[in-house]
Length: 338
Image (cartoon, rainbow, N blue to C red; front, side):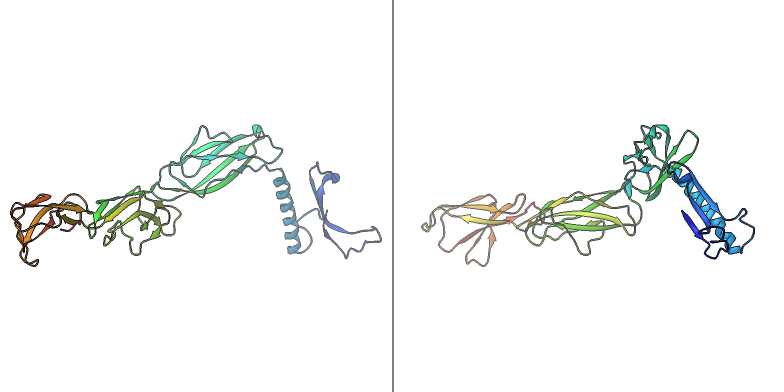
């Protein structure tokens, strides 16, 4: 290969048919199986010519030397390594060599700048890297080094980030309440460090999740104003960091309608002075509620009937103008009003 020509050479074509070559390079005798050869039109890189010409000649020599050596280099290739690896999480590593190279002819050494261990060995092509436990995101260079029988060393380096094992769980102090009941969701962070951001999410079906506006504290009180069933979870993350991200478990909050009560009077029509058994039937709500029977002469002013706290009430000698009703009192369900 001709690298540089001298188009002004005075001996061309009188002494030589040309061209006049200042730099020529290539495989010896044009044989691709032989080594590289470089010819430069000077015996001394520091004699004759301008400084720029001397520098150019020296650069050619150095580049040729590098290229020749690089052709002989056997650069190992490390298999895929994730951009982030959780602390203490085993990660498989693999090493391959260029086509035609026998890996059995090389000794292998795996290294990492962040510590950890290689199992079963740091001297095998395929091994498992177990990162160390770290308090925060830690840069880690994993290097595969091979050495041939002549002592020549070649290596490849990949960089990853070891992330602290952050996790978060959420619990609800009350999972089922009546309308207006009190619910507090609380998160618990494990192995977290400073700079953690919180974001509560909700979902009606545990499939489609939405961020809850303003819900960025470690606790959250969900709305309970109307009957519903909602799922909640928390996301944690660090700003401008590839680590510190985690999603919590899901907790479900069910809001049921407030309890109500109905009264039945069999038969529907009776005569004045008859004896009648009234039956109260509570519906909806949570837990249990006590019954208090009341009577009124006009349907406006109501008075508790002493001792009438059962699900049934026997009216003796029914009066024509007396009204009766049952009231739910002392309901045990959270937020279940009387």
